[in-house]
Image (tube, rainbow, N blue to C red; front, side, top):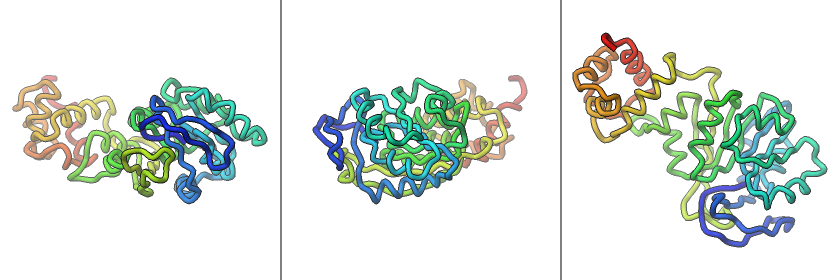
Length: 286
C-alpha cells in the first residue's frame, strides 16, 4: 500500500521479495502489519462475488489479503518500478490484475474494465494525503459507484469525514451526502515503513443508493461551498460573500429555510443544507 507523503528512505517487504525505495512524489509508506491489514479487509466486508478495487497496492501486502476474499482484485498502481514485481508476485492468481495507471486519470468503470471486473465492487486504499479528497470524490461522484469504501487517510482528514454537528466541514458534507461514514481505527506512524510524521486512520464509507439530499447536487454544492467559504463567519455573511448576493437576500432565504442566519456553517446538518438549497432555488426574482 502507499500512504502519506514523507521523505525518501530505503525499505523492503516483510517477505523480502521487493527491495525498493519509498518515493516522496507518490507519498509512499508501506504497511505490512498483518493485524491491521486483516482489520482493513474485515471492515471492507467483501462478498465472495464482489470485486475489490485497491488504490496503490505498493508491495502487495493488502492485495494478498484481498485476493483470499474477493472474486476479483483490481490493484491500480502508478509507480512503474513496482508493477513488474507485483505482476510476478500475483502471476499464479488469475483473479488479481495489476493495472498501471494514475487513478485520477480514469473513470471507475474504466478501472473495472481494465481489470476485467464488474460491479458490485468495494474500494480499499491507503491514500496518499495529497490525493485523498479528489480520489474519494472520483469514486463517490463516478459513473459506477462502489458499494463501500474503506480507506486510510491522515487522522485529521478521517475526523473531518466522520464529523457531526457542531464540527461539520466542507469535506464532511461532501462525503456524507453520498453515504454513512464511520471510523474503523487509528494507526500510529510506527505501523509503516518508513513511518510518516503524522498519525493515520481508516474510515469506512457505506455508499447510499442515491444522494442523501433531495435537491439538485449542483445547487447544493454551490450553496455549501458558499457557506464554508468563510467558515468562522455567520451564515448571513459567508453566504452573502460566497453566493455574491446582498445580506437581505440571504436573510430571506434562511427565513424560508427555517435556519438561523446567525449560525455558523459547521453546525448545520445535511438536511438543513438541503433546506437552505431548496429555499435558494425557490427564491423570487432569481
